[in-house]
Structure formats: C-alpha cells, structure tokens
Length: 336
Image 1 (spheres, rainbow, N blue to C red):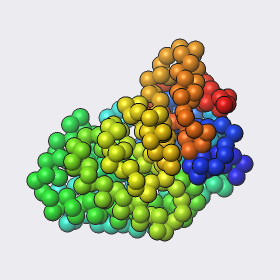
Image 2 (cartoon, rainbow, N blue to C red):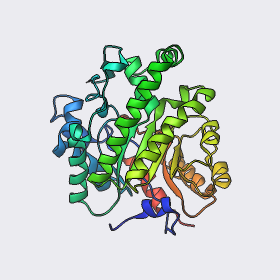
Image 3 (cartoon, rainbow, N blue to C red):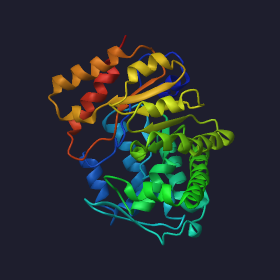
C-alpha cells in the first residue's frame, strides 16, 4: 500500500500529515457518479452491480485524492436477506416492509450478499494506493429503519416498540448483532482494511436507553474483533454524553459530528482515535472561508496522530465538486 496514512494514524504511529476521507464521498454531487447511476434501473441494482459499484467506489480516489476508499453500498443491504423488503424511490429515500413479527426474521450468511465482498476484492485489485473501508449500519439505526418503514423525524414507532415490546426488542437486537457480525467479518475477509459502523439515528435515543443499548453495540465490536484484527470506527450523531458512556471501552476510533467538543475529548482520551467533525454546510461557503475554517480546525487538534479529518456527516447532492476538492487539498497541504 503506497499510502497507509489512515491506518498509521488509527494505530497512533507517526504521520507526515492528517489523513482525510469524506462520508458520502462518492455521490450525486459528482457528474461522473450521475453518469454511472444512469446505467442501472434503480438504486439497489446499482449497489449490487459489482462493476458499477467498484467504479463508483474509486471515483473519490481519482477525482479528489482522498486517503481512503469507502466501498459504494448502502447500510440497508443486509436487511433484505433477513426478511425485510427494501426499495428506493429517487428523491424519496428508502421504503421498508415486513410483517411486524420479529420471530419471522432470520440471520443470513455473508454468502447471501456476496456481491459486497466482490466489490471489496475488485477495489483492492484495481488500486494498491490507499486503505479500503467496509461498513454497516449500527443495530439501533437499522432497527429504526425496519420499524419505521423508512426515515423518520421522531423515531416514535421505534422508541415505543423498544419500550412496549421489550422481549421482541431484545430478540431484534440479538438478530441484528449476529447478522452484522457475519457482515463485517465477511467484508474484512474480502480485504477491507478498516470497518465503520454508522449509527446515524442514535441521537434520537434517550441517554438512559443508550446505556442499555451499548451492550449490543459492544458485543458486535467484540465479536468482530475476535475474528479479525481490522480496526473499527464507530460513527454516531449527537451528544458527548454517549462518548462518556463509551469511555474506557475497547474502541479503536470514534467519528463525531460538529455538536461534539472533539478537541476537548482528544485531550481527555489520548488513547482514542477521533474522526470528524467539520460541519458539511461549510462547503456552501466561499472558498476562502472553507480554507480558513478547515485550517482553523486542524490548528486546534492537540495531537500529531490518532486523528482523521472527515465531515460530521455526509456530502449532499447539491454541493460543488470543486469545493469538495478544495477541502481535501486544504487538509492535505496542512503541516505542523
């Protein structure tokens, strides 16, 4: 690997500069992405087409010069073989259907989503420059999609299910943890160098319930670590109180959004790798502001390793490719 910067930083090894990659770095803001997307009849088919998904995964390396490739896929992919019908309508987001009976869901093998492994293998074959990141959704986030039937602004169905149907919730969490264990281990065996868990909707969970939920999250992490040495990044949205609940646990890295005092936490937890936490809205600003704010964040980072620059959430379709490239170049040109 020509550029192992991200792996070196996670391990706390000396690095010449901070590594940078961006969530949703391959997306609709790229004309090249839109051209490839038009070759598939729908989004799920696009994700499952090994050739197209590989080409999309590689776009940010070629167009932006990022320090890691995250494979092009979707967090909902492992839900289909569990027994949940998943579909996407352009501009409307995902739609999920199931019979409402947790007992009818199942734990699938990685073979049932073998195309994900094939995408990783192809990306690794076609480039030897940077690490490849595999990923999954967090158990709570995936449970919310199943129960809500899609995205939600309140997650009230999910929370009332969790409180009213405790036994079924416990069973659902166990099913998801086992499914995601197979899913992440399969990706690692296919060649993923890093794994990221996206728990985007965890910010809706009351803190006292997060204290209970983290046992499933940590079980997922530990089960994967028992079978692979690949480092794991945990991404969540929202409160620093979740970091307090996870402090001292065996996590390799956490990715946080712009509401978290990341700089303060870097001083508090020097053993932990942090990723983030620039607000993506910065990319709607003038170029000089993008440079100023990016350099301002980097200058505050109180360490010379165990940090990965990223956004606090993903890139949006209406962003300017040139400004995204400027952001990446600004990080890459920063030195101590």
